Image (spheres, protein in one colour):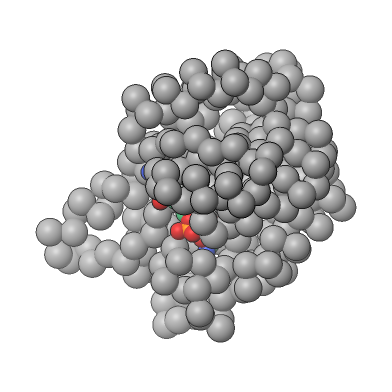
Length: 249
Ligand SMILES: NC(=O)c1ccc[n+]([C@@H]2O[C@H](COP(=O)([O-])OP(=O)(O)OC[C@H]3O[C@@H](n4cnc5c(N)ncnc54)[C@H](OP(=O)(O)O)[C@@H]3O)[C@@H](O)[C@H]2O)c1
């Protein structure tokens, strides 16, 4: 992915990692459109950062995705980068039948929402120069956090989906790069970890992630140092220890 001169749509751009990426990429000389459900946040961001545009989008709602696609196709014909970053993360007790809706919401947003976004926006990207789909998964795609079982499962599925997407796009010679970002715990409001000292400060995460991309523009995965022990656990034989560690954290 080139670092400047792109037109980028970032889902979940109203807060946390998505907003952070939006500000950094805008500053680096890209046209950035941030998307999310909270219009008041979008309005605040666009007022404070002239040049960044806002788009109301609920990725759990197919009609909202269809409307967003029409708006983007008409207003941003140069779109060449889609960042699938929007997501939710909640704790879940699998032994309580009343919590099934929590699981369903994760699948509808994190997994089905991202898949629907991909189907809707790929036709706008295919054939563009320097086209990219960037999927924000999680280190928990590789070793689950048992307190957030469906969240972890959606991220494992998104890792798998990203792998297949990359292969299909390469097979079709579509010229679209697929980049997976697998963050460790980062201080955002996602699971109320904004003050958690064990999570990475957001600015450090953004700096390290964009440095990795600058060093390796054709990267398949962006995994900062703090996430490597989880990402590599299966391959290096430490899976059971890492799972035990995450379980007790
Ligand atoms: N922070 C971490 O520790 C961490 C670690 C690994 C992976 N991640 C991943 O990073 C991504 C961003 O999370 P974050 O930490 O930055 O959390 P965050 O601050 O809570 O941001 C989540 C974003 O997703 C958006 N969103 C949620 N549901 C949506 C929907 N149905 N439609 C459209 N947008 C929706 C929210 O915007 P609205 O509410 O305005 O819609 C918000 O902008 C997520 O995919 C998360 O799984 C985070």
